[in-house]
Length: 236
Image 1 (cartoon, rainbow, N blue to C red):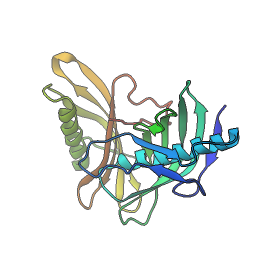
Image 2 (tube, rainbow, N blue to C red):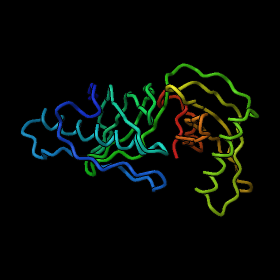
Image 3 (spheres, rainbow, N blue to C red):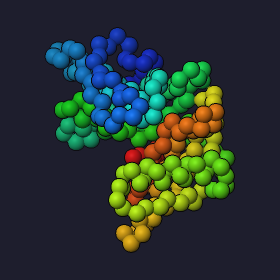
C-alpha cells in the first residue's frame, strides 16, 4: 500500500534524526544513511513514522550530494512510499532546492529506492524544474557545445582507457531559480567498435560563472524513459 507523507520543513517536523553529511565538492559520492534516534517504536504507526523520518533524511542528503557545490538546501514537500520487495521501499515525490545565495527555490521531482536494512537512499533520479517543456536550442549553440564537452569529459573519466565520443541530438533549455539554466538533452555515446548507446542528459548551468552545477546522464535502453518521472531522467 502506498502512503503519502507531507513535509513542509527541511526534515519531518518534530522528528529526531541522524544523517551523514553530504560529501564536499571533489570527493567521491557516497550513499547517505540516516536513522531515527528512537530505534524501538512501540506501535506500527510509530514504526512507519521512524521509517518516514529516515527516508526524509536520506533523501535530503542524497539530493544534496547530486550537486557539484556546497551550500545546497533541500526541502521535501511530498513523499509517497510504497513497498518494493522485502527490504526496499519505492519512494517518489517532489520538493524544492536552494543553491548558494540564490533567493528563488528550484522545484524538483524525484524517484528512489530506500533500503530499510541499511537505512539509505542510493543515487535518486531527479527531474529539476517544472514539467513544462523548455525552449529548443541548436546543438551548435555555445552552451550546447559546452554541455556536449562536459558529458564527453565525464564519460572519459568513467570509461577510462576506452574510446568514447558523445554527440548531442537535441537540447532544451529553461530557466531554473533566479540565475540558472536547466538543460534536458538527448544524444548518442559512440564507443567505436564496442557500439553506440542512447544517452539522456540533465544539467544545471550557471551562466554567470560558466559552472556546471549538476550533470547526470543515463546510457542504454533505459535512457529517456518517460514512464519514470514524465521526462528523461539522467543518472551517472
